[in-house]
Image (cartoon, rainbow, N blue to C red; front, side, top):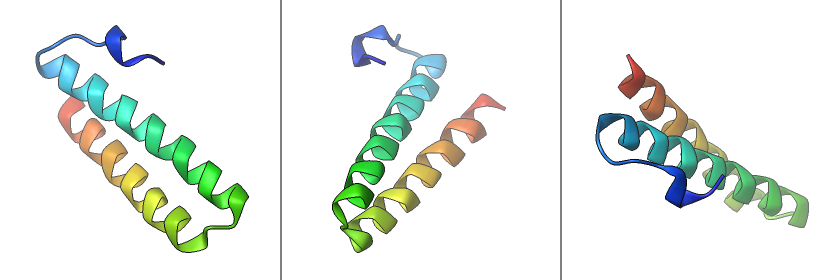
Length: 59
């Protein structure tokens, strides 16, 4: 996914949150692979929060 695919507005905010969640998920996997346990956990929490916020805005 590329950032420039997203539009402004309410739908755009949800798209941006989903994009951020995707990035956080990828970073979390990278941290986990490299053995950065605390960083991996923090990124997992951030990913979950971004997804919850995106879902909240979709309702």
